[in-house]
Image 1 (tube, rainbow, N blue to C red):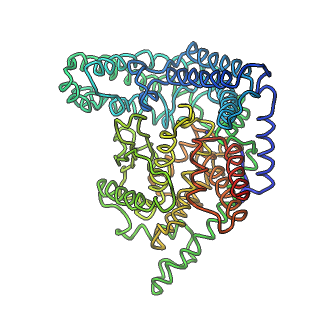
Image 2: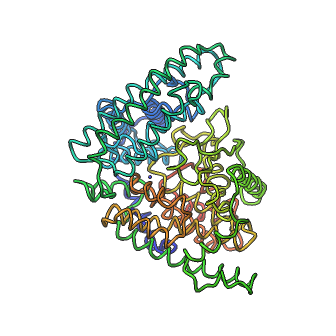
Amino acid sequence: MGKLESAAITTAAGVLLLSVWKRIHNHPEAHGRHTSDAQSSASIQLQKLYERLWDLQMSDDPIVATMLGDYRFDSCLADLSQKGRKHLVSGLRSLLRDLKSVDYSQLNSPNDQQNHTFLFQLLNMEITAKTTFDIYEFPTNHVYGPHLLFSQVPALHPWRSVHDTETYVARLKCFKKQVEDMIECCQSGIRTKVTLPIESVDAIVAQCRSQVDLGANDVSKSPFYSSVALKFQELGGDLEGLRNAIKEIVIQGYSELGNFFEREYRKHARRSPGLCSINGGEKMYRGALKYFTSMDYSPEELYQLGLREVKRIKEEIRKVRKELLMLDPASTQISNDLSLPEFLEVLERNPKLFPDSRGSIISRYESILKRAHDRIPQYFHIIPAAELSVKPVEPFREESAPSAHYFPSPADRSRPATFYANTWKASTRPFYMMEAIALHEGVPGHHLQISIAQELEGMPRIRRQIQGFCISYTEGWALYSEYLGEVMDFYTQPIHMLGRLLVEIWRAARLVIDTGIHAFGWSREQAVRYLSQSAGIPEADVQAEVDRYMVLPGQACAYKVGELKILELKDLAMDKLGTRFSWKEFHDVVLRNGAVPLPMLDENVNHWIRECREK
């Protein structure tokens, strides 16, 4: 969810990427053989393929289906077995074969043509992912995995009738097999010497222990019970059956999983963090970069891009530090002679810049998001209906969670979207970084982006949801939203602009660290040192961030690559359109097609520019 560009993705690279996309788009295999079928027949075929893919994806990941408002699989969990993996890949290959039989020449609608191209790309990328880097032996990790997603079931499950209480209990009972499948996958990894880094293993053990401790002595204290007991009472659900399922399946399952990772798996866990330390790791990593960026840059190119971006942003930080010094000329503590870590240590001594409680983090984010929402109509035509709530990350996963992350609302809007704020070690999380983080995860970032996509009419359901191989677009937009805060005059004080730049340099440093770890053999300590010295990340986040990059290779590179592409296209539009450039129209064309690979985004924006110039 590699590629790259220089400080603003060069025009030459953009032309090359577009030509590559067009070669894929015009390839006979992509379009299928020509037939005499009517246009409507080809279009109907395509629509049916999209519906088949939706059913395949939802049945493959039932909790995600529930999250998205498809409640057909509420009593199920994902099948992590080798059989389940083969079923998924077989289904994807069947869809690709059938797509090749669709007569592209009979798809005269631009929407149908783009839907065809998108589906061809999606199926190829998902098949490649499942056979290269997203492999059977890595069923989970401490950042994103079945044991963590399962913990979200109480918050995601619908509560409409007694039937929903029954599907909830049935889903809990499925956890036994899922734990067995995870253990079987990991045992296969032990045999093939394809294992997780030891830091991830220790975090998984702690996460499992936390779930066990919450309910071992009193089931009613488990979030699987306490979060839903009132709903069971209101709907007439079987509370005794719920308690038994939690005690005998859920708590026991977390206990077995934690024991396995601690007693059996840990001694086989790899001590080197990068994929380059395992057999076939180089191929895995290149596959991950391709998947997460939707482009073809080498690890070396991404590494160099990261170094250039870090250098550029450091210069911007130096300018802001100069402004801060001008505001307080008598202060010697904020001298520009200090290194970035030294400068941030000075700021840490100012208690006004940091929360004094967990609750103050939540209230600050709520205030920032309200301000941002009030500014949005000046820059966007489309304002989605989905609500957004701010919640703290749950205690059992807060130590290894990022500073913030986003969960979308389901399509039926039965619950609001959620902005999760990490309140662990609250006093180390500076207020001045929260504006940029709120814009990234909330509005105009992920919440606006994903909610708009969910509400698009006439678009296949698959395209209204995030697809993994479009993550560079998705995360690129969120990072672009931090930049947009400058355009919106959102960073009203130099200290807030400093926070925005610190968050940006953090994302730039990811390019260096991710490639350093997985392609060039960096140690965990080397990565932690670089992130601390180059980006000045809060102490609570440094190790958690590096450990995240270790288990999600390539994903961290998506942010900067995507942001630079969007900025490149924005600059191109401003240059070509001059006074005719409109922020609202530019944002419409970027968002109105849902998440797309970057070459397709390039094509969409260039088409819009041509249309505007021809008017």
